[in-house]
Image 1 (cartoon, one colour):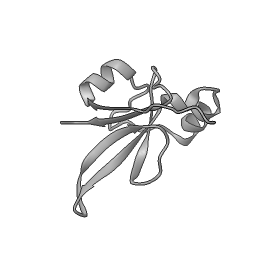
Image 2 (cartoon, rainbow, N blue to C red):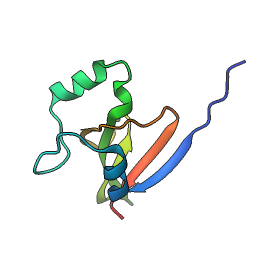
Image 3 (cartoon, rainbow, N blue to C red):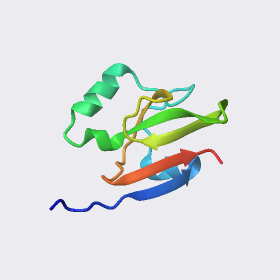
Image 4 (spheres, helix red, strand yellow):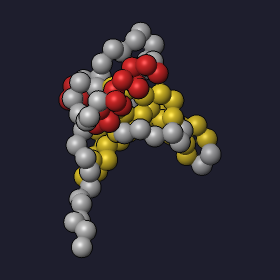
Length: 98
């Protein structure tokens, strides 16, 4: 029998997220990283837990804004962020600017 896992879902403001997870190498425009940085982070044993995906959000097929979610995602992806502090396996975190 497989062990059950518990998922923790959190919605954070961007201010709280910045303070807690501490994004690395923020450029002057936004939170983008080069492909090399992203691949190097993925190559680390626990590197996935420091990667976040910036996505577009939509309401009724109209562009609404952006959000940041933990992990590597491709749907609606704008780019990736690497943070100093990692998220935990089982966490589902959504960062909004509200």
